[in-house]
Image (cartoon, one colour):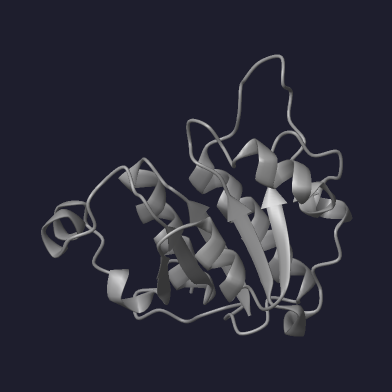
Length: 167
């Protein structure tokens, strides 16, 4: 099982995009409080998140509670890592991969990252041009690399639609 965890997410659009990716990829979404937005039916409907009930979402009061729930391999996703995500073996589905992303504005707590430095992975980028990549894009890159290494297990590699534009 694959998991995406968001530490204190601030931007509801990012969380919504990541939730959609989780629904499409059978990925568990972990949300670690506090949030920078409200998660209520009213807010979700207004944001067009009609797939929210299709996502396996687990809420955690804090980082410590989330860490105690991890029953697999934890990967910290950060621009500060020396190891790139593509060098990590993510092929074993039974490993339960957890990809932990920090807040959009401050990332993960520095002390926590220093303590878990060997678990940190980076997406290569040109750091001279941008501070960071968008959170929802980064989550999609990581989960699809993981799924690619797992031969897209549990996903449809092709699908026939009623009004298929290519058939």
